[in-house]
Image (tube, rainbow, N blue to C red; front, side, top):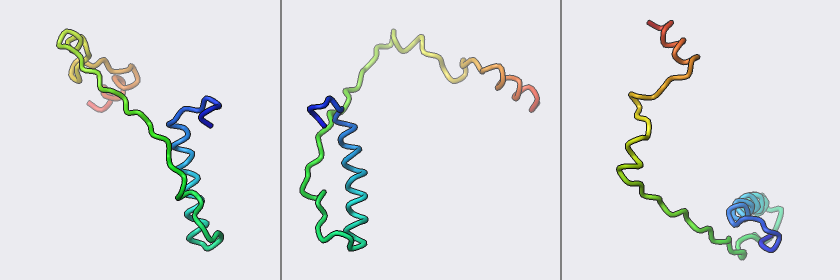
Length: 80
């Protein structure tokens, strides 16, 4: 799968699903061996955290400054 260009995260998720199926089959005594136990999962690199400066933080909308969508503003007006 790696040679076909499938991302590592997708391969890891596929391995988790396959392990769940094989574990259920092993627990139900459908198979004698859990064949997925000997296969290693691919490592997935963690995303690096991006630290922003105060200049980048200031223009972000605050919760009290948030503009409500028209349907939400209408519902709030009716509640009053």
